[in-house]
Image (tube, rainbow, N blue to C red):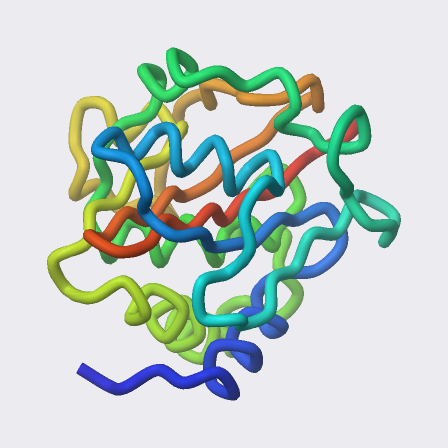
Length: 185
């Protein structure tokens, strides 16, 4: 396992996440990881390592707290519509968030960039260690957490009022990461 540091984390985060995307991490403080995930989504906690986060609304503005936060209405029971996904599937989902409607065919020059983008997703998830658990709201993971998330079909169990949202929740013993994308029209 490669040691992830602040610089490699930031470079990979910026390579994968931009406008209309959310990437943030918080500490595990509760037995139930869903409470920690909710704190991260609602920006009620800071990154325990002081590393960067990217919280960009569609069009490039900043998501904030309160009503400006897409996850303001999320409650712990909403996590019942998330499904375990393999680490490779989580990496694939993080990359697919870059495409319109979360499809890789909508990522410019994807075939030539796939390996590099997957490498960046791997760096981001290495922060959580190999024993981390991953969850997604992509229904394809419900039946097969090891499915190819690039070749998936299915629906998303949305968390927000946006037309569509999809993401990955990374859960380790010490931290929870939220990596999410939004489609507004």
